[in-house]
Structures are given as C-alpha cells and as structure tokens.
Length: 189
Image (cartoon, rainbow, N blue to C red; front, side, top):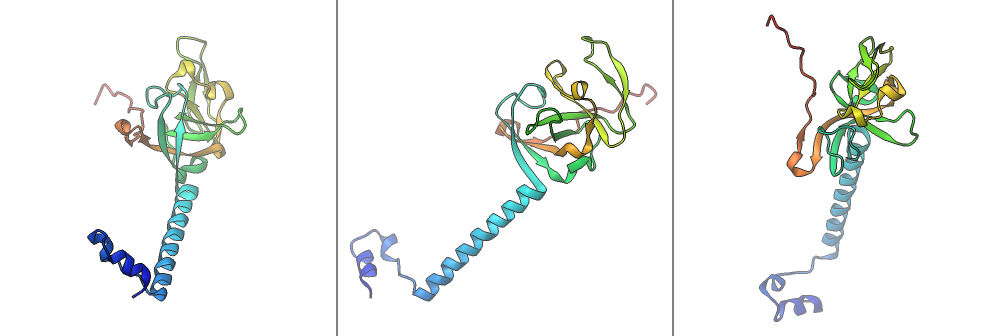
C-alpha cells in the first residue's frame, strides 16, 4: 500500500478512509474522459451561441414597457437572421444602420410592400410610406424616446441579426416573448 493511501486511511473522517488511489492507467482514462467531456461542452456551447441563439443584455428606454431600461437579458434566435420568417409585431435585434458597431432591438411594424405612417402620433406631421422590397419598418414601443425607422428610414433585412424570443433575466420576467400586435378588431365577427 502506498504512503498516501495509508495516510488517508489513518485517523481521518470515514469519507477519506474509503479513498483509494487509482492505478495510473485508470487515472489516464479518467482524465481523458474529463477532457473529452469539457471539449464537447465547449464545442456545443460554441455552436449554440454562434449559429443558433445568443443571450444579450439590453439597456435604454425605447422598448419600455416590453423590455426594462436596465437589467434585462434576452434570448435571440439566429434562425431569423436577415429577416427570415419575420412577421409584423416581432421584436428583432439588428445592426444599427447609423451608429456603427452598435445594435438595437425594435418591433417590426411593416414588411416589404406594407404602408406605414412615418412620424410620432400626436407630436409631428405624419406621412404614409411604402416599405421597399428587401426592407422592413421598425419602431420602439416607447415612440417618444426611440431612434427607429422614423429617423433612419426602412431597415435593410440584411442588418437583422435575429428575432427576440424570450426574456432570460430578471427571473420575475422570464418567459417567451409573444408577438405584441393584436389582430384588427372586426365589428362583424
């Protein structure tokens, strides 16, 4: 019996007395197994965060009350990059067309071919704009404090990084984010 095993079995709590030293071959297999486990975990995390989803912190008041000004973390699906399967009412994350290196989250209010009102209701003169092909119209939920398509025009679909699908933090707000627009009211229904 080697010295370490004798030391561990003498006068120590029962947990340590049952400890045995693994033979060197078995130790190598254990270390190799742990290395493979860590490598697989790192690979899956990389694939998850690079190609499928990402988690981002948000800040700013342009999306209040949907997203808190500070402390919110959101889950973004990258399957919706470049406007794939985006619908009116969805929240999207995109590269800001005017502020290089910055991103933003806004609600889609118009898709190619749709007509939208440009301007803040009740604050400035509004005009009707048709969203061109390959673009969408985005707006913040808090329109008085939002830099959106009213300022930079239609957003190219190529700038969309993904669709916001869930609140991650704070835990009290954790859950899926549904499409926030309601179907138009039909008086005949």
